[in-house]
Image (cartoon, one colour):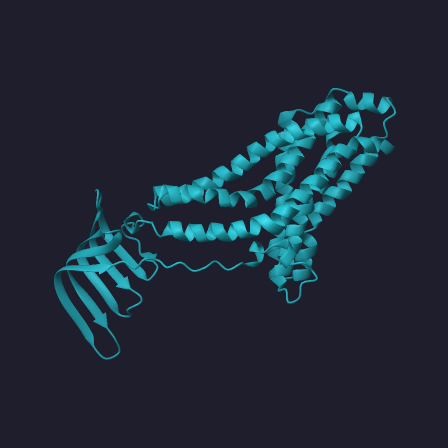
Length: 351
């Protein structure tokens, strides 16, 4: 490997790792905030929530890698152009295409890494993430979900109250309770609280009546105190959806693929190859930025990524109307990057 290639590759790797830490941390922070809502508002156990964050990382890294590579190349080559290093390199007789070699090499290597991730690592991690999330939801404190004046539907339970007296054990006033697994079974009570005995939650109602109705008779019973044990939410094994399956399970040679699975294959394949196309585009664009700096590079990164993922969103929206058009559209961002990269290359080296 030539000294020039090693030098460029080393500088890009430094910037890439720094950007990867930033973008993956930013994406991870957003996911953590969503999960912490289960702890702060719904009472799920903090340890259960934090233990599943790592399972989201293989999915997040698939998006963080293209972002980081784009930023690293824009900044790296932009600094070389700003400091006239590219002019000196070309004056030394270096073939123009050799300037792009480090970026292309890094893009190909990262595409290979994304392939390994989407083929073997991310799919099982997504299924485990959903299973662990179901387990975490078992710890949710139902009293934290109840808002006065609003009907709460939680599994087979429907519950509403008109007033709430806040305390260690909240007191609900003017209560309506319905249990959908027993049709026609309702409770109207003046007050209700949630108690826990050996980890088992139950509603305790005071001063109310039980209404039970079926096709033949109606029953109304007054009571002073009544209790109803809340069912523990069961866990259903997560089944792999199209977007959760591995690339190797959805190749065009696989028999019996559904249209959603074929579309997800094209979407994942386009994402896996995106580092290569980002490298071609960013390496040539950055050479045109004579006054490039980190702020400009960061703004360009955000703008280009916004356009890229908007096109992917359009492809997903088209999937419901035209499968073939959606599969073609999902490749359009990569094709556009390649065309623009070639155009910039000709502007720099051939015109």
